[in-house]
Length: 496
Image 1 (cartoon, rainbow, N blue to C red):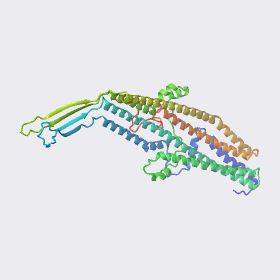
Image 2 (image 1 turned 90 degrees about the vertical axis):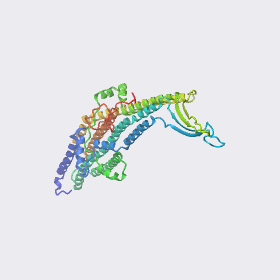
Image 3 (image 1 turned 60 degrees about the horizontal axis):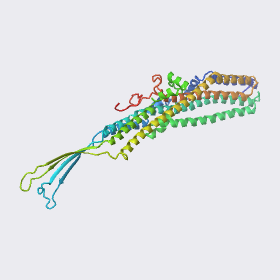
Image 4 (image 1 turned 90 degrees about the horizontal axis):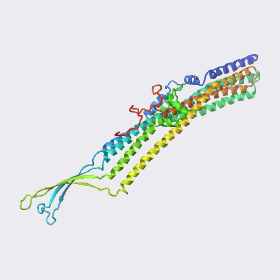
């Protein structure tokens, strides 16, 4: 920057610095914590390429659920269990026997002895009691846990993908804020350099070094944020790739290298749930969490375990069998006819020695069923602990947001205006102006961080209460709807 008249340099310095800092201050301070995302959205959207559309959160969640191989595996396992339940509910194949009985060894003649006969028989075994029907019921009850597990998987996928998307959004928007302020710091450094070179004014060499240092530190922050952005993008890509063709991973990353510049709308919890959280009513919270898909899936295992106890009790009953045979005898050597034989009978075992076998089987089944009930208790306790932790974090973030809106933003603005006024009147230090600008940038970044963390906490809260918020308000609400479109709210006891 060159000046032809050094006499006008102080005035030019004051005017230029005032314009630069005033424009930047206007950008940073005329917004509240709820409006900060709109300005950063405009900054980032102006620099975004036109080759690809930005990835919204709802699109990311839809793609992640659509290409999730875990859901396909769960469906296959459910169908396998259903097929197995159909297979076990059938009698074993009958046993056919054909033989030659009582053939004399002195001549091996079929008509020599009257007891020589060609015998054909059939035998059919029957299972103990109702073991086949009970075993089928148990497999069907185990199969019914998979729709619930898929609901829980989709809800967890929404939480994980939302967290990664918001981390990508955080890095993207902070980069946009820093790049915007870097331009202002660059202009300010040029003005200070020009003023110092002209030997007019109170500019010192340390002011130039301070301006250059801040530019370097901004570049370092940009590199760190770009690394965080790329890391979040790589983790997000893991959920957006179907894994069938890894050759398209690079193009997918290019496609999803930026996300929407607007914060998504997340469905709030129902007022009834909010009141329970505020009152810390653990009893009623536990009742509501009992309808969570993860808990209902364990409930299905409990039903199957109780059915397993009934199946083990069938070992006390006898196993029956029916057999029938027909024996053909040839005429004797004198030509006289011999009558054929027909036999029929039943067989069964007597479960007399039950202490070492049947009793142990029933005892093992009972203990296994009780162990599954313990799993449910542990899972419910874990959900309550996670819920309380998330709710506490959510409340703290809300308080921080209120403090920033009511105090910190206003105080930072007043500090920046005061330092700017003092410097333009040759009554302040340049380092104070720079420090005020850094504080302004840090405050806007803090506001953005609070907004992102609040949304992440809100998504996590929605995971615990999938059926308590309105599903029509926003597609990002965690409605536990499985692939077939049915909404399951309770475990299913087959046959009841």
